[in-house]
Length: 130
Image (cartoon, rainbow, N blue to C red; front, side, top):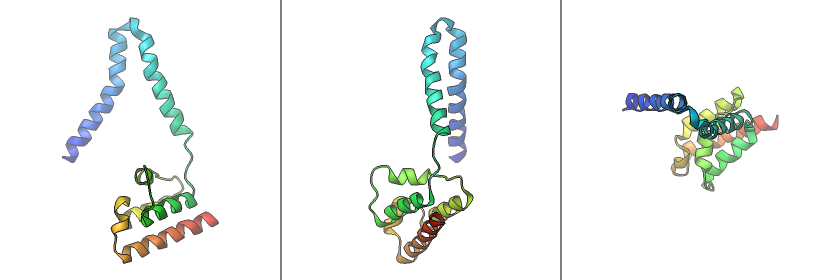
């Protein structure tokens, strides 16, 4: 099933790129409609370029909220998609995910796993303090 999902995702991306080009060729008089797609792409690119990398303290605070069960809204999804650029921070973030599994299940972990996560959170805070 994994190969089929990857294939479908790739085909969807290909169609989203080729679709407007084919439509522009077939309907050249409707060019103003394609401005909306161009504006959408510009917004996505600017959002990606201007995104700020999270600090170690920010990652530690998010992980602590997830571990304590005080997370709300989109905290779980935001934590799963952080992917920091700094190598040490990225390694510690990955260790939290590898140790605890899915963040939404951290509150149901046994005490050994929770203590491992607390050690990683302490390391994150020390990284942020330096």
